[in-house]
Amino acid sequence: MTTSPQAQEQAAHQLSQAIGRHMSKPIQQTQAMLADAKNVGVVCHVHPDADAVGAAAAMVMALRQRGLWAVASYGNNELPAKSLLTIPGWDAFVPFTELDEDIDTWVTVDCASPGRLGALEQRLMASDRLINVDHHPTNTRFGAVDLVDEYSESTTMVLLDFFGVWGIKLTREMAHALYAGLLTDTASFQFGRSRMHTAAARLLDKGLDPRTIGAQLLEEHPFAYLPFLGTVLATATEVKSFGGGVGLIHVTIAHEDQRDVGQDETESVIDIVRTTNAADVCAVLKEYSPGVWSVSLRSREVVDVSQVALSLGGGGHLRAAGVTLEGTRDEVLEALLGASDVAASTASPDTRR
Image (cartoon, rainbow, N blue to C red; front, side, top):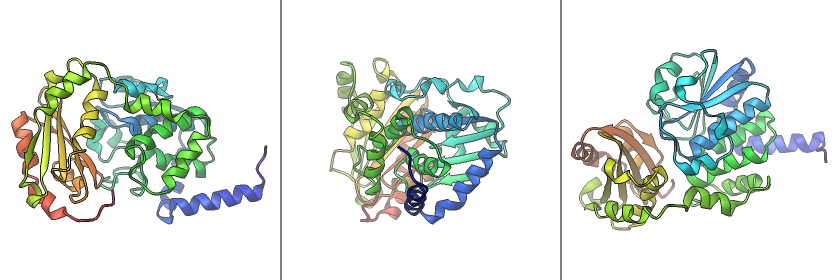
């Protein structure tokens, strides 16, 4: 079935209205830079999540559809959570040490700041052909082109909009990768605008099975997950004075606690801790390697945790943010508790995410 020129023009108009005028210029700039590209490297943040892997995979597929040579990578050596290997396009990823020297154009996805590029930070920041694709309000606009839409629910949503303007034909594999990011970054569609549901419907119409994808990304854990949870949740501590009295609950996952589980299990802890209503803010301190801690932050409805994370060198969203810190567990916790005044200064009854 062919679509009439009138219908195509109407669809393009509706898409442009949905995206918003603030994205018109960066979309045009992105198209212009990619029009001159030959070899493209797509880089997501270290310790990638589903939005990062899904966005990178989908971007590589789109670039290859346009006849460009493209690969994906990220700036640390470890494999991502095993659930992310179910996202189509993983075969396009290469170790960062094997990225071709002939890459002339870079695209970062889901990176709020250069520090999230890990071992690739210096190489990418030396390039004058860097496209920064993201949706974090704390993004530092470090690209030569910044395709950043802080109103989008996920980076894959930013790309879905861009692909519509760029004339990319969505394949089933591409839709799966985009859906993975949208599903997880909205906490299974709990946070976001109504158009996230129409976007999800469009992606599911490509033949996706939402039950299977949801189970693969969010629900499947080994038996070792249960004793692991017991160990971790036993560290739960309440700090009632944090943020001027809004409260903080924190738990610790030491490096040795993770010997029998994977990154899927470690990353899922925040979704359990956030269910408590005893405090507005919750934090999970995760020691992925000795002395290096990834701190996940969530708030229920008062504190802007993106500003808490930003004060510590990280970033994120109003209700979900994170930061990487080095030191002992006590030093990392002291730094977090030291941001209590920042939390208090951002406290607001605004319940937007």
